[in-house]
Structure formats: C-alpha cells, structure tokens
Length: 198
Image 1 (tube, rainbow, N blue to C red):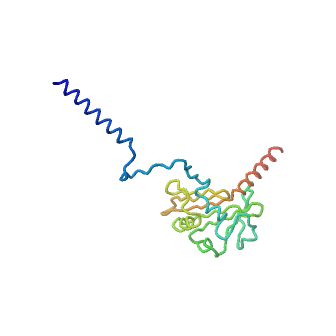
Image 2 (cartoon, rainbow, N blue to C red):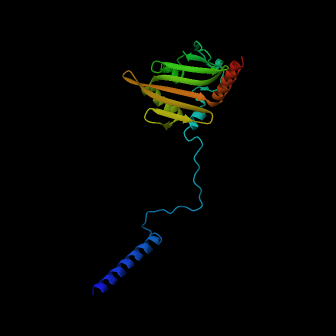
Image 3 (cartoon, rainbow, N blue to C red):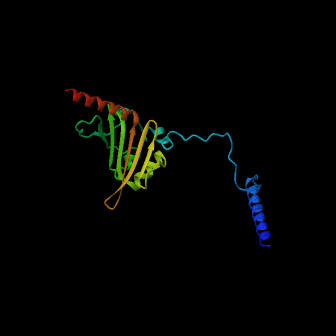
C-alpha cells in the first residue's frame, strides 16, 4: 500500500512538473504583457556627444562665437598678464546681453583670447542666477553629483560647478573652444621645447 502511494505521488509530481515546463515553453497568451524582442533590428547607436549638441551649436556664449576677433567685443578691459600665459584676458564692462545685465550677480566675467581670437569664457557669481542661465544656454548637461554639470561637444566643452561661499552658493561656468585648446597646447609645447634648447 505504501509502495503504491509513493508510485502515485511520484507520477503526480512528474506530471505536474512536465505540465509546468510545457506551459513555460508554450507561446504567450494574448493576455500576457511581455513583448517579444524584434529579431534582426540593430540597437539604436548612442550619439558620440550625447550631452554636447547645444554647446557645439552655440560654440561660444550668447552673442559671441569662438574665433571672433577682439574687435567684435566692445567695452573690454585688458587684465595684467600672468607670466608665461599665452592668452590675453579681458573683463567685460558693458551692460548689453544677459551677462552684461547681470554683472551685479555674476561679478566675474572673463574673456580669453589666443592670438587675438576669442577662445574661452569664465563666469563666477550667484548660483541662483547663473545656473538657470547656464541650463538655458546648454541644456541639462551631464550631472556629476548635485553641484557639477558638464557638456562635451566636438567643437566646444563647458563645465559648471557650485561651491559654498559665505552663506550661499557660488557658481562657476567655464566654456572652452577645443580647437583653441589644442592650439594653445601646441604653442605651450613649442615654447617649452625652445626653452629647453637654450
């Protein structure tokens, strides 16, 4: 009797297992929410610069494109050069454009020129004013933590960083031309080589 019960139990368990396997291998019922993967469709390629299209499109800052001559920038004041610096740095003293109108909140606005051509922009000021303008210009960017944003394009790059200053947060925006960055690196290398030859 015990032997018959065990044989019956084994047979019942085997049939239940087989039924479960067959159900798992059968095609899904119309009520199943799973969508089968499309065979033969290649995955969508990831763009080379997924977060830099706007920084490339602007290729500078609002109103000025990298490569423009110094003559295209009125109301600039030359700052004393740093020893060994290849670029010339100017501060803007006009009131035009967003940065001109917000000089009280974004007090540091520096324009860098290499061989007389615009190649970099740096702004430092109140983060509650600067950050919305930065994201308006370049989009949401690639976040690295809560206080860092990056934009990487093929022609330009930008970085925005916030840090505590006094009782508030200070924002820092740095926008750079990649072509001039490469040119500056080449000039610096040539300068160092010439110095070492002496």
